[in-house]
Image (cartoon, rainbow, N blue to C red):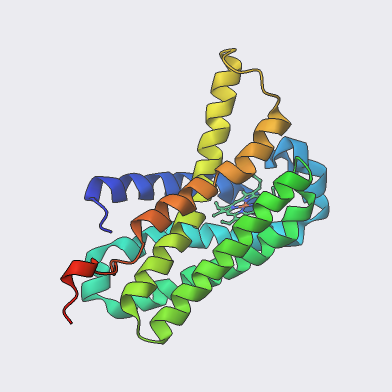
Length: 213
Ligand code: HEM
């Protein structure tokens, strides 16, 4: 799977925009918190800080790993950014798991965020394992899947903007909590399915007639 320059630029711009939006949380000023969860976040500043710090790092530097010139010409830099990215996923994932039980919307939203956090931790770990065992193509596949999940922070917020716009225009009558519960799943499952589609193994079994006996 190769990404075009325009695609990379759009992915990077959207990622940096969400990094900028989310960074406000690191002021720990309750007035910037997600309104419905303000009281919960005041009580849970530690997991929130762990989650947002780690996730911001992963989202900010993840796109650099797709830049071919860095991968080809500066492999050490690629490795250093990769380590930081995985540490970001680890902190963000553990923080996400800790925040999930109190997520807005109840158990279905909680399950969605737990699914996302577990998939995020698993794909990052697999990416690391593959490179440690010298399987470069598989490392690439798992890291693409990992970043597709990191990018769910972008899809979640784009979906919330879409919901707010359609609601304000009177085009949908869904209440916010129902929409949020659906988005807790929709922000990552399609990302993962698309990444799995584009990273499926190139090794297909040969058709019977072409096998030489
Ligand atoms: C990919 C795995 C991720 C998981 C499992 C995850 C999980 C969660 C959970 C459970 C919450 C609490 C939601 C609630 O209270 O209703 C949350 C909130 C939050 N997350 Fe993540 N998250 C992930 C990625 C990210 C990324 C990459 C960012 C970086 C920008 C991010 C930034 C935030 C922020 C700022 C909040 C506070 C609430 C808000 O403004 O939406 N998350 N996350």
